[in-house]
Length: 532
Image (cartoon, rainbow, N blue to C red; front, side, top):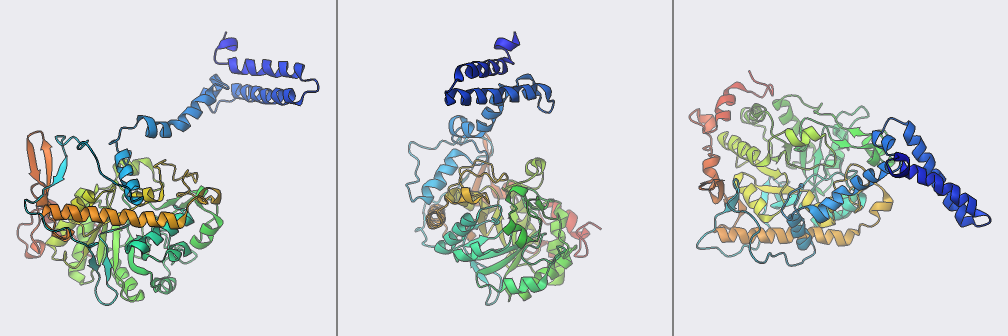
């Protein structure tokens, strides 16, 4: 009975239809076309009956394709019809709507009260002042580095977005938006390309384990290439990428669909094959060597600020790096802390979900470590990892950041719809693809203006929040400004949840206030990232 109205029925009726159409065809071409199409369906069904690679198609030779079709639509159906307004997957509809409104200069207000459950565990908020200060007219600059090449960094900047991961017009629009808004754009590990330079914006050049843009044919660091390219006026800082929040301990991934001839030629990798960067640097292997490498890059770039980007893992490894700075006197200019919740175009699922320290915990640890070592005023701290609003900036700065980097929100400003199809090369908006037929739809001038709008409106919202709290700069925020609910009846300021370490406490040898620092500081040195 399966033949007539069960799982094989589609094959039976396709064959029957092909026979009927052939009998009726005569001199009428339309019937011959119908017969051919039905015969093709019959052939596909008969093939599926015999194959064993796809059990669903073997049991449902034609009807099984309906399952794959509906599955392909699932993300879109869920996003537009089933997803709640505040469900973060990873960004909620409300968060995306806020970015779209700010990017398009639309009113981004919410009527009828908050939709947030303020009595849920882990809910946090900013305490306001009974005497607010005037709203500051500023984008809150932070000086990074020393000397003539020091950089005045905006409080909000574009996080690492590599060419290849993003399309040529997407890169150019981001950088042009940074130029319009007066903030910085991190290249990601894919190196500095003409599309960055065409935008005219300030650049943070990220030097990662693949050394793209400054590598020898066998993949090692090439100092001559670096010195020549780091001299570009648009390059304002150098960031050594140690690890990335979405996949710490794993090299960068640019999958084959995006490795075009242009990418292959510049990166020095085979076209059409996955480009997987090494998991670790070959230019150094100890904290002391890392600091020497950073000093070398600073010299070769004319004194431009040099720092590192990392996701916090084993605490003693970061403590060893900080202790090496104290002992050697060679300092990093900045540290970018990437939370485990950070985004990427491609990463192994287990790495994304279960590896690395989330941003808030990592920020507190880094701030405490630098403060305890007496380095906090000199070494600046950036933060990145699933932040989208002005309140996210407030909380990040209160926990220890000097500035915030965002990538995915700026992609929303470009028009990203969170299709989460970044690795395939089939991005529906033309942003995360290297297919010219897809990225032709990206209007660089329009999108650049929206990037600048999002930055401006978010920083303005930040200024209003700061004024309401009684402070005039995010650098004045401390952990006691933020409250967090622990349960229905227990609320604590974050300085009680995350005790602050006294400046120089590690150097004096007294009580530290953070058990990890007290435990590992005596057992590390610049000679190794391990314990002794």
